[in-house]
Structures are given as structure tokens and as C-alpha cells.
Amino acid sequence: MYAIIDIETTGGKYNEEGITEIAIHKYDGHQVVDTFISLLNPEREIQPFVANLTGINNNMLRNAPKFYEVAKRIVEITADCIIVAHNANFDYRILRTEFRRLSFDYERQTLCTVELSKKLIPNLESYKLGRLCRKLGIPVTDRHRANGDAIATVKLFKLLLDKDVQKTIITEAIRREPKYQLDPKLINIIESLPTATGVYYMHKANGKIIYIGKSKNIKKRINQHFTSTSPKATKMQLQVAAVTYETTGSELVALLKESEEIKRNKPIYNTALKRTLFSYALYSFVDTEGYINLRIDKADGRKKPITTFTNRQSAKSFLFNALEKYTLCQKLTGLHPTKKNCFNYTIKACNGACIGIEPPELYNKRVQQLIQHNSFENKSFVIVDSGRQTDERCAILIENGIFKGIGYYNLNFQLNTLEMIKTIITPMENNRDVQHILKNYLRKNKRTKIIRF
Image 1 (cartoon, helix red, strand yellow):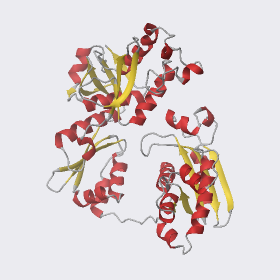
Image 2: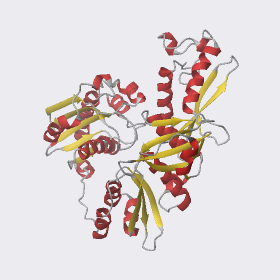
Image 3: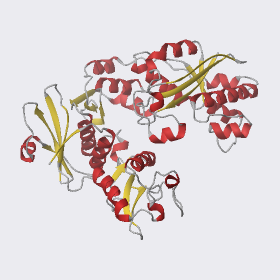
Image 4: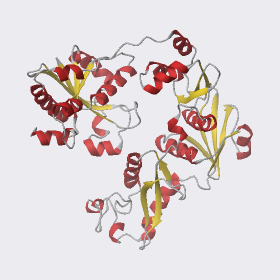
């Protein structure tokens, strides 16, 4: 018995996505015998580029059931079934993540129709679901919606079952989740750790630090390291003798400390943060007509960016939001390259800067608002965040656009002046990665408390 699944998500950070729509077709090898389809309220915002792709927006999901309300139905319809999906690793990971949030251990065998297609129908240019279905003559409706894609996967899977005459490939392709027995040494380490937010350090027997990380739940994150079967995790499990930690209370402080500590200690397994955290940036320039243009480009240390991004997709998502918030032009933001007017002007969402109707001084005023809002240049302020105890807060100081450091203070202590704040601050290094962490955090956490000077 097979449970053929397709899931649409909010997008966002790895393992922090939420499900917006799910479709499950229970298939007995001959016909669909049961179906479950539902929109879901993910209890988090949908990324704009995902909303554009799927057509699912936050308003549509306001009254939709939450995952815990449909979890029992999902367990029942997939019971004794092999999960089948196009890119099964993704759909199965998302499902397990949602169940893990409910403290339920959801385990199923899986089959991936991408892998099966590559083996049974080799040498195709693309194995994306839409292109594969077109090549095989499989009709697809409601592309990028859960049920449309799930029905297409059912038809594709039927075809693959027919092609696999000996049934050997399907048997070999089933992914079984092995049970892992943790080393008692690792169990003892996990038991000694807190569930608090902070930075953790993995040490060899001689005390040398081999890995530094941060987490909102240190115990849970270390448990994930110790149960992972990735090559890097396996090597760390063999070498680690102790884990020390520093609680921070604030996730932002943990990010800043993690970055600084990795640069200082250069642990052997921290390959990602040894490099620059970001690869794309938003730049501005004035064109020959006097309009301020915005462009996403690869980060260049020689040019001063407005703000920086981990990847191009997050940069585009930011610009799409800015387009709506500041009534900007698609052409002048590089989102709609054209010699004529942009599409938004056609639908009256642009005031015509693209064809010179709106004067540069009016358009530029809104662009400058965006730049000012996202740039730290010459600004002095303090970000106030959670402390390590309930009666404590942390302060992150930026002075004249430069990150100065962090400090903790009791709630009875009044942050009235910049001089008072400096007395509690522990100095930390300011660099491009720190600027990226701060700007990225403030973009994503709109309700962060800020005291400006």
C-alpha cells in the first residue's frame, strides 16, 4: 500500500517551514482507495516568492485547520503505507518536522519518484515534475498546488510501476529508517545540557574545540548532532569528549557570539562560518534620468551595500516586499527588465517612474526611505532582547552604524543614555558578517525593541 503525498510549505529557514497545503492519495497499486486534501494554517508567514508560486496567501489560511487538528487523520491514512513523493526527502522531512513539534515520532518507509524516474527513464534533460509529466504525456492541472501535483505523481507512479517489470528497482529504492543506539558517553553529555538558548562548544579529549554552534534549545540541537548519520556528524560523534555551553537568552546574541567564536577558534568542522555568511547584496545607483535604481548583485567588499542576503532568493523576496511597501517600480528595482513600462504600471501599482511620468524627486524620496530603514550608517541605537533570567535583559549596541558589543542588565536598571549603556557593554568585533546578522535579524523580527539615540 502506498500513500502518495504532495506538500506545499511557507518556505523559509531549513526545518522552520510550515505546511500550507497537503494532499494524500492512498494507492493500492491499482487504484486510489482513500484521499485526504486540506489547506493548513502554518502559524507563520508565507514567503512572498512562495505565495507567488503557489497562489496560496496568508488570508486564505486564516481559518484553515492547524496541523495538530489533522495529524490523527494523516497518521491513519498513511498507516502501513510506503510514502511516495516527487523528491520524497523533502516531503517526508517536512512531515516529520511537524510531528516532532507535537512530540510524536512519525516513521514511514519512503519512495522517491525522482530517483525511480532516473533509473527507469534515463537520460532525460529534466526530472522536475512538470517537465517530466509533459515529456511522458501526463496531464497536470493546478501545478504547484498540493492536490494537482499529488494527482500527477499518482499517474507518474502508475507508469513507473508498469515499467519496473521485475519490481527490483522499487524494492531497492525503499528507504528504511534504521534505529540508532547512542553511545552511553553521548547520552551522558546530552543529559547534562540545558534546554536554553545559547552557544555550545564541542571538545576533544584534550580540550580542543572541534565545533561551535548556536541553538534556541541546546540540548535538542546536540541530540540532533549525536543522532545524525551524515559523514560530518559521524566523525564528530567519534571525537567529541565533552560539550560546554554559554546561555545567552537571546537568539540574536547567540548568532553574534557564534560568529565571533568561530572566527577566533577556527574549529575544524565549522566550514560554513569560516567563509562569509552572505553572498548577495542590495546596491543603489542613479541612472541618467535621475532615478535611484536598486539592484541585487553578488556581494562585493569594495562597494557599500544597503543590506545583505544569504542567497539570491531571499534578496528577491525582500525586494518584492519593498516593492509593495514603498510603491516602487519593477523596472527600476531590476525585477522586470523592460524597455517599456513595468507590469505594475499596467495594473496601477506603479506611479510611472519606469516611463518618466512620476518625477524623480518624488520616486527617490520613497527609495531613500527604504535605504534609511535598512541601513545602519551614522545611526546609534540599542537592540533590547531577552536575558538569561526572567528579571534580566540584554542590550546590543550599535553606535554610528558600528556594532560595539553586548551586555546584560537587570530590569531595575534604566537605559537612559548612551554613556550608561556603554558601562555594561562587553566589546565585540564589528565586521561584514556581524552587519549581515544584525540587518537580517531585524528584517525578520519586526517587533524587536529598539532604543534610538
